[in-house]
Length: 579
Ligand SMILES: NC(=O)c1ccc[n+]([C@@H]2O[C@H](COP(=O)([O-])OP(=O)(O)OC[C@H]3O[C@@H](n4cnc5c(N)ncnc54)[C@H](O)[C@@H]3O)[C@@H](O)[C@H]2O)c1
Ligand SMILES: Nc1ncnc2c1ncn2[C@@H]1O[C@H](COP(=O)(O)OP(=O)(O)OP(=O)(O)O)[C@@H](O)[C@H]1O
Image 1 (tube, rainbow, N blue to C red):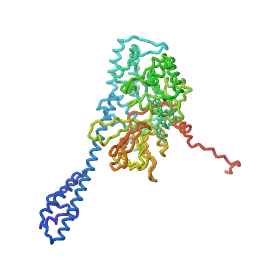
Image 2 (cartoon, protein in one colour):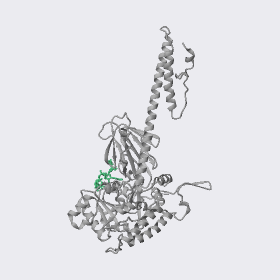
Image 3 (spheres, rainbow, N blue to C red):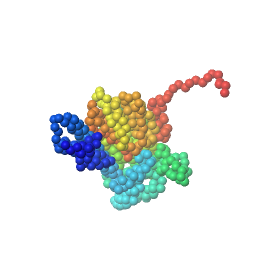
Image 4 (cartoon, protein in one colour):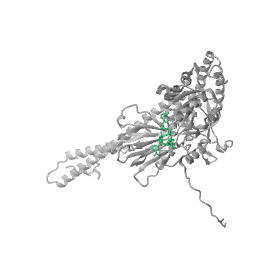
């Protein structure tokens, strides 16, 4: 017997036996020491001769064995949890790196600028500042590329003035526009946010050749209207600590105004399918925009075929052939017109995986929360939009990634999906409750047991999220709505989270059935146990033109679309009250 060895073992079975017990924050040291403790216990037991008569010792050694087993299980559990955490971290890093690559590719911004840009996108809460920062930084580089390109072109091409006296993109215009743009760039640097970063890629400009003429995107400037424009009180970008007083940041929800700095030249018209009235209006609009406004017009391949069936007159209408061309559409198009309901606006947004040109949504559906323009007056509306300035609503989108457990060892993950309304994770055809573990950044939020969960933008707050009991939120409010669908709990109220968070919805391995994700009501994807959906605010909002302004249009849509709080007015007393 070696009692001294037992003496040095504590009540949890941690014998010293040459084993130190390091404390570490991440717990790896603890796991190691637990395993070592088990080994030490086994050694002690082997070295200790136990005689049949020593019942208490047999009992004691059994107890030690049990303790050792429990220690091993605890250590293994901890190691598994740590491995899982490390795996998640790795996937996040992969995803983040991929996001950065994608965004930089679409934007033509170098990596260094990008990291600086992310750090600098302080508080404006709309992701919009992210548009201007690369614009300002790349300005000098771009200006030089742009100057060279247009100087070359001005030698090659002749002046040409089209029928309506409007300058096409030819020799004199580039020089003129170059000066204008240099001037406007300076103005942008001083006051506002310009669209130039979308225009600056010389490769894209090269590819925009129509009838041997370079088509350039119209440049515009965004500015924020606010009452206190001339007072210093409203000029702060970040929280100020002037003379020890804390003042709040400049409000991000002011009305945004878009002013064209060069006239729009190219329009894409997107239409709801299977509707005669839409088809007729589309043909009329194409004719008017071409004859009266001398614009280049793009439509979807299906619509071009429809127009050509009607008349060969429409052969000037352009379209695209494949996905690759669609990806470049934003570099060619100044304005998007939609003819349909909210679904057509969602469709239009889904076509643009990166920057989105301003959208003018005409209402030809039953409801129209995002379609404030009435089609009967399309000429007046388009006339005023093309002249500018126009009020716009910058509608944030959510960027969603599905992360497959089965693909954890692969470098490439599925492409991100951008949604304008919401991403829904539900039980699909399964009759079991969903079991969705939700995390917000590094914090556990809750486990959704019910029919599912909606992660919605504020634009989508009047859609599915509203039907599931979520609040209606003005579309300029920067936030993400977290709305459960039929939760089996009395206390599960919907949340609105800040726009900067990253949400992760994880299907646990012990889930009874897979879940299903759908994106703006489309593209259903199965999420197996172990899979996750990661969602954050996308850097590319959808600018939609307002009929009046963001706020007026919002109230009009909830009054007209939902008859919000409509009630017969209570009658007054017939006899006046004695006051
Ligand atoms: N129970 C529900 O309310 C429910 C169920 C499924 C989908 N939806 C919504 O339908 C959307 C897809 O729309 P769709 O037109 O392609 O499908 P759809 O043709 O089935 O139309 C769905 C309805 O939702 C309305 N809608 C869409 N976006 C809206 C918004 N931002 N605000 C208010 N209403 C809006 C549309 O006008 C339409 O009436 C989804 O994004 C989802 O929000 C709602
Ligand atoms: N250009 C398009 N190509 C393919 N599908 C489209 C296109 N435009 C719209 N859709 C789809 O057609 C469906 C109906 O469109 P939309 O919601 O605009 O019309 P609606 O149903 O008549 O309007 P409302 O819902 O207001 O009555 C939607 O599911 C939408 O995604």
